[in-house]
Length: 474
Ligand SMILES: *Cc1c(COP(=O)(O)O)cnc(C)c1O
Image 1: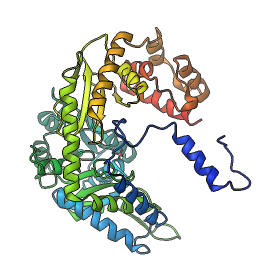
Image 2: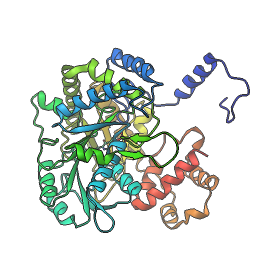
Image 3: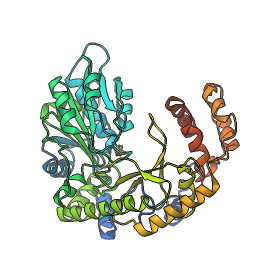
């Protein structure tokens, strides 16, 4: 039984490892391609085993002081160099993930360009929430620009959104929800002509687009070689297939990179110099990312990217054969968003039906007129025939079941409820009333919850999600 206090006498290793394995039984599988979000499997067991060994080798090395642990500098220079070599040059920082890379790019842009009043960041509606998080943490205001009918950033809208307080304009290559490419050269040119910086979010695309281009596919310009692009983020723990905790942020020039850094001599202890958000940090992810990149190599990444994209294209072709379903936009990477055009066919019910058949398809809520949909992040390991069969079966079952029953009045009640008057236990009781059991970490049957969230405005969704997280951990 899990226990919420420290044992007086240390427990035996075998027992602890068995308990971890038992806990993991409830998790979605991280290999095999039946979970089409969150995880990236090469299908090459030896690569993942090597990454684990390299991770363990570097586990206790502390990135806090690169002069004490020069291996950190050597590995980071190689990784950042290899990424810059493929993505238009620049100097960079190895970070814990896309969110930290974006945080540093936003900080650098803010500090390099002081403005009168609150600085602003111009985002297409499809930009990743990490930019909202960075703005929230760093005291910037978000100026949101709607995307066009193909879900791409709108250059004219972006130009109109600039103000004397703008410090950064963002484009995604591609955006996560639909895998479509923003017009990076146009957006970067608008930013440059206004004298502001432009960040390209290639967190998910940065380590798949260059390899797809190598294999002869049409990949529009998006990296630091594009005039006006001043920084770029590329996650190695996505299509780099490294274990989580690996991303790179590149800056067009060293002086901009220095604005990402932080130093403090303002206390009587050791001197602090940090390139990233964290201070003490394991070099495990660094060692694992270095090993993964070098073990796969350019030819390996070309093969993996080509296989993943072929899988995505077969999904797109297969969806066209399933009545009621439709792909949103034209993905340039192996990310596919599938929506329903049939009011009796609810995508959240399809997700639950698929889950009961052993597949995880990621629900995405409606936003600014973009319909609710299911997102697929594909790799070459997904058995696409089995996936399409599961999707077709789940769709048939979802149509027969109809849309979820949302208890009458619930959406209105939630929209007007003052959540400050409800504690975590009260909120858990509220969730139980719509069939969500928090004791096992939420419930795989999420259609009702998703339908309720989908019917509420984003600000209310956010309040409810924070309460959900708090209740989950209480
Ligand atoms: C995944 C992703 C991020 C955030 O990355 P994390 O590693 O989850 O912090 C940012 N932007 C895009 C486009 C992404 O796909």
